[in-house]
Amino acid sequence: MSWARQIHLKSPDDLQIMREAGRINASVLATVKALLKPGVSTADLNAAAEEVLKKHGCVSPFKGYGHPPFPTSITVSVNQELVHGIPSRKRKLKTGDIVSIDCGTILDGFVADSAFTAGVGDISPEAETLLKVTEGALNAAIEKMRVGNRTGDVSAAIQKHVENHGFYVTREYTGHGVGRQMHEGPQVPNYGRAGTGMPLKAGMTIAIEPMVLVGTAETKVLSDKWTVESADGSLTAHFEHSVAVTEGEPLLLTVQ
Ligand code: MG
Ligand code: MG
Image (cartoon, rainbow, N blue to C red):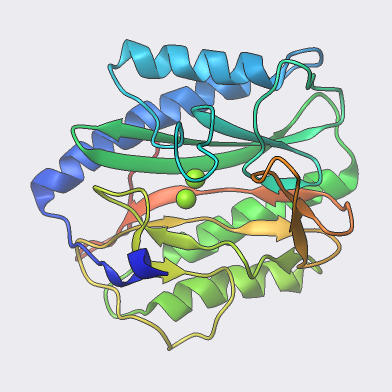
């Protein structure tokens, strides 16, 4: 992938803008999370997200992205849908669903990218565990975002955490550098070997995004050309933060 070779280190000024973009993105996600109730359509979630973006004078890099152009500002992926689900008026949430929301925000030319998965009402114990493990994998990966480590340390932390709990990581969709473009280098897969890959440097900003499946690592793309599902129909989850490497602690960009 050509974008994976373009690595742009961010200045403190750049990081300040990205932090603000991340704050707005987090408020979009918080708004959507509060709406996850039975009977709400996935298009309603997109409409609410667009309202928050508009209030801040921002747009999402998702809208119009790719081929065919992605039609909405957030992706909504329910249960076996792993990523890139297209919001629809016909798709109504039900009690027990788990819903992955991914959103991007562009502010002053910089992108923030973040995602979470949450349940609608009571969810199964398996679903609870899946959410906990996937978020845990993200936290383990963030902890590795330090000068002196390499991208393989981040990838390995995700894979190890997920596989230790008996789940699977996707091989096909990866974390990525983020900045003036939604996708920059370095590419950060959800699997890998510690001590390999690109050395992390202060000023690198990476969207880390474990995508986890209960029963298989295999996925398929639906006929809408976007929605990615687990090949076996098992549950999936996705958590993502945009994170900056600094001389000290990892800096979480996509929190309020
Ligand atoms: Mg994302
Ligand atoms: Mg991303």
